[in-house]
Length: 95
Image 1 (cartoon, rainbow, N blue to C red):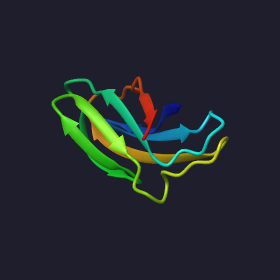
Image 2 (image 1 turned 90 degrees about the vertical axis):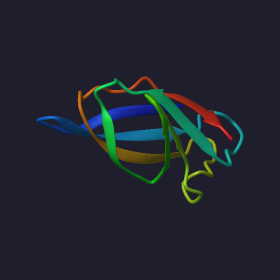
Image 3 (image 1 turned 180 degrees about the vertical axis):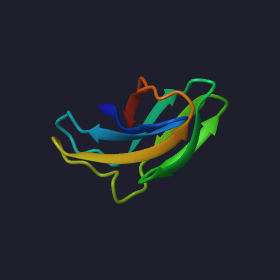
């Protein structure tokens, strides 16, 4: 499961933090979070994740050290973007 929250906003941009949680009963050995960003939004920087973009499709993979999650554990990544400050609808899958 992945959830996002806006942690800061300013004229023309924002910062968001995303928490990835293992709500299952087995250990995860990696995760991928995906979403579709609004057309006016551009991701400027991202930390604690590996970013891939194609058009408005965004994908973030763990970076190894934050990908292994025991049941009940969580990891996170964050990013800054310009454009509309919208909390994305996230999809999360284990790898």
